[in-house]
Image (cartoon, rainbow over all chains, first blue to last red; front, side):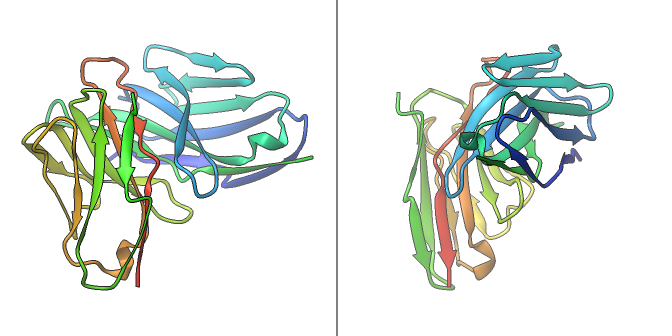
Length: 116
Length: 114
């Protein structure tokens, strides 16, 4: 059974700092890994998706990396801003043994606070 | 495209009541799923469907029922609500033909069972 872990559970940084959020998974046979942002009381916003054949993806100040062999992904946020304050979730996609069915397994998230 | 829509946004139920959470998508996605999110936790899979007429259980299926009569709709039924079902429910969809199978999420339904 796939397990996804995110460390730390909470992180507080001053504005302008570069930071890294960590995600680890136990089953390396993933098809992709997605990073989501969730604001309090809101739904999920997809930030980046890394295909299993890729090593990293970039979008603006965000860069996500994937190392399947070690079961790790990181989300790098450059020059953090107070507007980046949210919970960040990572999720790995695997195919179930039944064939076409797939399961997205989520970590419990890192709650980020960027202080002005 | 509206994407994935969910209704209602908020709901309060009494223990023992039943209700249906609605989910619809207009992207012609074959794969749809329901997740619940509890405080401080990630999302956990309740039920999923790989196409009309085909459904299966996820990680936490007890107390929930689903059916898939059309490609567009995937309702989640609570048969007899319990306080343990207080949670935020998310519906998601994706296409099996569109690698890398990105999942699209609805805005969620916040359910409180008293």
